[in-house]
Length: 211
Image (cartoon, rainbow, N blue to C red; front, side, top):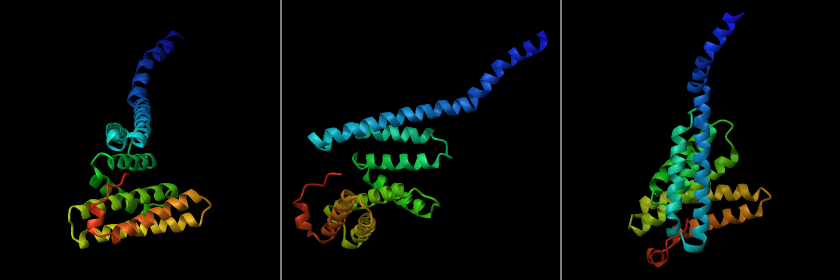
């Protein structure tokens, strides 16, 4: 009876090591991801609070920390965690729009829209969020391009893209019962239309819009 017990005792360290290097390692990694997301969400909340009282510039530090946390979490997530990766990519892009990484965010969001439109069984709320954020990034990119003196043939397709997406989202919102979402979608659409029609001299006299 002793020999089987000794053999079992001797295998315990091996089993523990195998768990640590296999499932245990993944659990530890996911715990780290959860901690990073919690930290990022905290900095997002802080950034929004600070921006509401002191303006966007005062909130840059928290947006930067949030973006870094989301980036690290993305690096740690296993590739098969597709839904979580998509959500984190979106949240990271949102943060990038506040820290002078608008072109990077715009490119990421463009790819995500294409990916989600082709994906089966995509979460409609996630798709709408990605589309709205992408259209918003197109709006800000247009604003900056116009201030930099870009010709109409460069910025017009971008704002047309934003207008079409905002119109689609407004139509969907009107079919629902959430009046606040409908109002927001209509305002987004109207802003895109105004930006496309606005004279450059008028645009130059306005402060940069807040994201």
